[in-house]
Image (tube, rainbow, N blue to C red; front, side):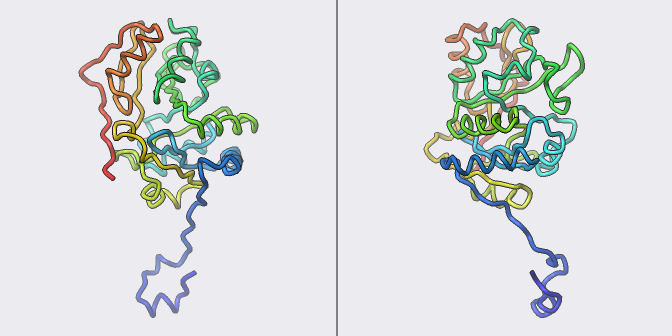
Length: 261
């Protein structure tokens, strides 16, 4: 702690009169660390977690206060909803698949067989209100997944504690590209979180180290909403392989730019 005498002696500003506390660091490869992080989330904390190429800011999916704290940390506009992260097998707890033409088994196969993907689907009545867009039969929800071992393991620990999944978004200040370097992430968010889970993505090519691609499945043809870490041609191949109709691509597709490191 900086004392008043030290401030005057060293010419430090008065705003340094309180201690800055950084979040503890945990390792994605250490399962005992993931157990501790799961407890932090269950108790209402928000964390940075690796997502197979980028980092995200996450909390308990059913905790609106956690969602609010993530929005504040990012400086994100409040009219932009966050995402749900759940295991593909549990997607029907958040999405009303009766309002789509796509069977659950088909969606699960796609989500577990591709690098990463966000899917826009009709929201179920079990979806948290703070994550749904629209009302009634027009409501939708964005669910994102990557078949990444630390995430799969973390979801198992969370479910054991009665937590259905993550609420969250990419780890970046609003308008900036997503963090892919754990040290720079810690500089930006270390004082706003309760835990930072470290991992390295240096083995991945540049096109993987950007935010997730998103496909809208609320119509009879999948529609590309955002092109990120899975490019259009790879999406087309995956959709075809799993028996989906042809991907539609409009002129207003969002393109994710990589972060300079």
